[in-house]
Image 1 (cartoon, rainbow, N blue to C red):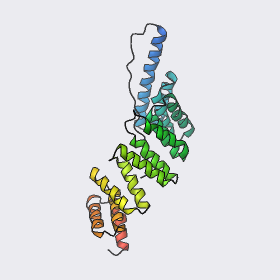
Image 2: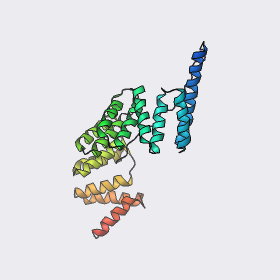
Image 3: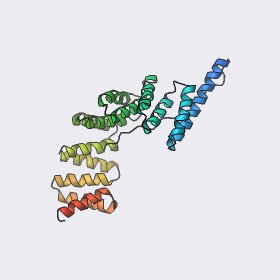
Length: 255
């Protein structure tokens, strides 16, 4: 399970005081209002897949308010999507500098760094997000840190991060899936079974989980349990890649 997750950027409309008593303050308030409006438009264009218009609006927002953290985070995503990585990094980094306590910005920057295989650079930002008491989903950066550690060839550090994620949210599906996969790959089949069971107790079955379930039970020589997993896969996931793998394996085994 290789997905790195970036929590949705919080794009909001601020209501500024209208009681300013001089032209300079009124101008700053007007610029801030305009910046937030352009940021919201840019985020909307980005959600619609119109990256060019999104960047145009977000650039306007930052010209009006260069310290608008969410505009930096959002334009970073836009640049990232079109492969302008230097520009993306500039804005990811700037967002974390402007608001060191912004867990979403720290996680987004860490995900970016991890995708560039800059694992050591990413880890402190994952930790910053996870350790922030105001960040409501610490399991997300902790799981991301686990994926990053695993991809850098550190399975023990990966497992530690996945377990930490599960202490914060015991039913978090990404952490359960990653522990399931990591356990199976390391031939710790009893542990893999435990994580399969934990996942199925908290979430609806999926084809990848049932395929893992089948392989784990086969590895544990529990043919009856393996057949139950295979039956669920056949009955619920016709046309899936996992069912095709199951049928191919059974053909090869003469079943």
